[in-house]
Length: 140
View 1 (cartoon, rainbow, N blue to C red):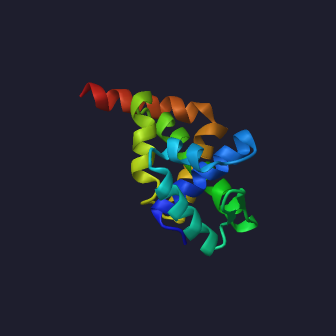
View 2: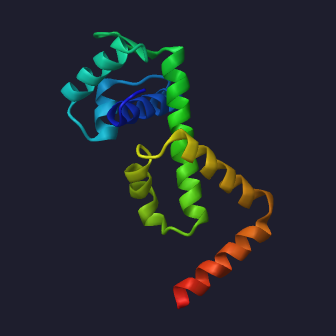
């Protein structure tokens, strides 16, 4: 299993490749707000662990293992953003909160959150009931 730091890099690389078709060290560094030398070290580690193939001056390519994990991490991030939105977390806090919790939840917990999100999606009246309870508790 990748470390939380490895997950951040894989998620960023996956998103860059999905958006631009490639991921450069400078783009990864900018997106994660780290130095390019840190990116190079992590890319070498991800290469060693078979998440990607890296050739200096030629770029990098995600392996099937890297693509699968990257997609899973991006989906987890999106799911947690959706969940926090549903439960009424203020928009300005959502990204920071997701970044703070995403690496600390088990995949079992993620599956349960996914089920809960789907539960609300299938019947909007459930969401209205939840909002009413939320409003009542905030007014007490």
